[in-house]
Image (tube, rainbow, N blue to C red; front, side):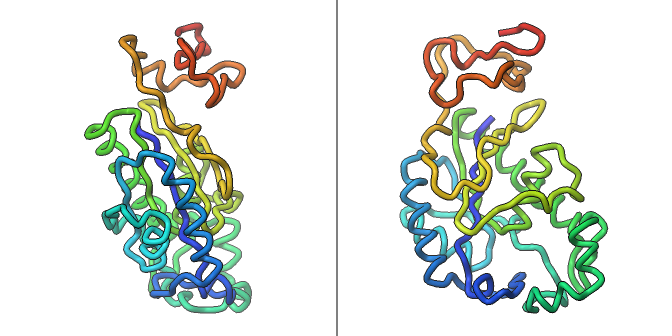
Length: 248
């Protein structure tokens, strides 16, 4: 299957001021613009088969700075959580609301007044990226890499799903502004390849084109015993890790 890169937009004026932007049209601040330009240098080293984005302006601005030659496709499933009445409020004020502890400790039960549920946000975001991943794989092959630009809680929910974590644990995950997270879906399980990467070389995520020998769909989902050779292990046979049952 293809490899997904999740990009969080750069820092916004709301982030800098300690507010919860939600779906408000807040824009990048100077730091956010610098973050977008910096991540673009790393992303342009990778052949991206597709670029999709949340419809909100902070994501579109990030991509305009990071990948000016791209033509992002808007995907509504990647939009920020609808925080309803919480939107636009200072985080310090929200921390005194009883709902705050629900969001912290039991987010799967969180229902934002006049907004959506956090579980609903997670479900539609995961559906969107899995749908796009299947589409990119079908159109460009299993070695393809594609990018989705979205928001902190949305990315954390997608990562929690990929790691097999209950949504109630997703607050343990961090997705900083301008960070990149990599996930590769397979027929059996996803693999989280990068998490909250704000400065590393991303070219190691490029999958070498396969030769005549092709691995079975089951083997594609196997984890290499001992951890494998990593990005450096791209020599002959290195894409066929020894599975737990001894298959190659």
